[in-house]
Length: 201
Ligand code: CO
Image 1: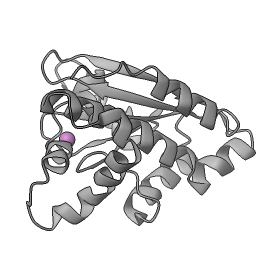
Image 2: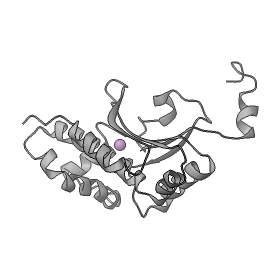
Image 3: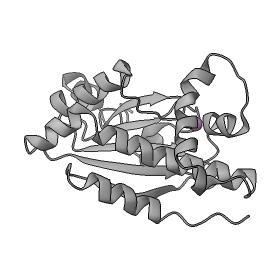
């Protein structure tokens, strides 16, 4: 890095000034910076199993608060990925251990969208759909945090996005969910849900 840019670390040491907060899965195949092609210093990152935003998770809430209020990021990206092990385990009702209790939040998403996911379509299709629905629900959760509501209330520019990454081809897909006001949240959520094609049994 120093060969390419002798000042790189000096600049980075001075301060971080990221424009983006990334909330993604802990999966080792889904590294935030590489996927979006950003350098150290350009993206603030929170990752956990199955990219969940849980209203009582102080870890995630603290990251969102610091990113929005102190770093003043302009974009929050919730990025899921197809083939997520946490989502697969949930759909398959696997017992893995302690993590099952964390994945209970994915099961809540499944139950909320039972009609969408169904039981007829092939497992992989249902799994992909649950990965997408999980991102959409977590975007909703981000928008409903006090931190994001307060930011919008005081007129801070903040966009929240829902994306999904495919390990198969390395491409990011937009889930048609981009929010920048409290009023827009429910219609945008419903629009995003309506964009998902129906599953083929
Ligand atoms: Co995952």
